[in-house]
Image (tube, rainbow, N blue to C red):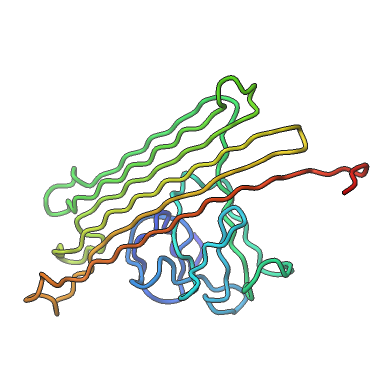
Length: 239
């Protein structure tokens, strides 16, 4: 693990500071943003642009990463710290681009489940997490149309445990992502994809002890849909 970076794959609360979320497990996070940001080349966390498949997911108000991805969907993480073009607006110190998975010629799937219910009541926080991915080629397309689907469900009764379990500290996180790839020719490919994320959590504070009916609950939603066409040109190609 890299010093100064808190790995948090599904976006759990992280301790405030200059550390940032890339991908990892649920943990303490600042309450006003999914990602407080990472520091690159001595710049500020707000000077880094975050992207998924080339499209920005940077929070337009608070900066930093506005949402997180299920780590099963990530094929590659591109980190650019200098020499980037003007096409990357608002990027002063660096760019983080997540490239998502694509389906292959053969059908493949993966499921993962984790829980703390086996640890006994003293350590059981009601945490259950599911990951599911499906990918392959659409029948009847001669492997020209491939798909990749992924989902993540995270449920817990206390997302920031301390010495004692806290009441009203629940969290429910749902993440879905999909991608379609159609190859017209070996050099021309169309891609379409997107994601939908929903996260709801409570933030218990002792100041609300006698007024729990007005307790604070936070709901975060993020979604993205995109379509792109790629043409690998040769020396004999003209536009």
